Image 1: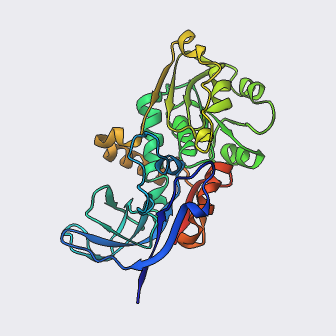
Image 2: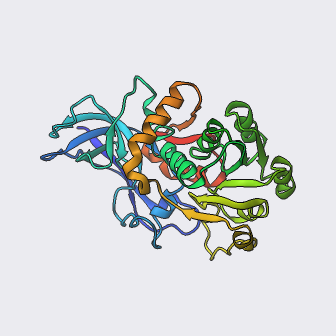
Length: 333
């Protein structure tokens, strides 16, 4: 008898996520009701925001309830359907959760074309991370030709695309990443103009050398000391789209604000937090542009696919917070 292996949230993590924070078990296979379809999930997206989703504090979405299936974007194949727009065999991506089989009514779920890109890419560069990079940089950062764009977590799912889109728009792209291997990848494979190793021991000086004319746009993914170093180099009327603050996600104590906060006033900076769903009405535009640039070879995408199925979820998730992944982190079921 086919069963559904499911990851459910058992307790609120303190600090780094632990396996005991989740319950992983086999459950009866869910049957689609009227207007529903069932997806056999093949790939699960692991995103830094997941740590916030399982915390009790106020956020842009309600936290995952204790006992609920762990929230996640995922991709798979429809295997049974009572929905007029989805039929067995359709490839889909959407908010399906960390489980082998998921039911959906089509909300926040869309068809994808595996003939144009691998299935896992539709939850990466051609999915939510790609849309996040597109809107955060172009709608908030508004880079102009010749300006300098800096992005932290530059080898990750969002950051890797931010720098490439900046280059497409005629700007200079500088990444910040952890370790020589990631920095080489950002420059040699993704085509950034430079990349600073924040683990190298002299972030401020290396950032100054990489950005001799200052920084016009900073795409923020990390926060903490990296944000302070960047604030010291921002140009007048610079823009800072705030996508994430990953350095604080597992903190057990209140996180201090940036030391260089004064730069926001002195340089008349625009700092705006955002989530991708703020731009829901422009999704078709982003998808068309991302797909075209990818097909033309202007936008390179890389997935870091890990094996182990749903049982590996807690351990693989922590790779996001220790710098253990290179590219979009995906769990294969």
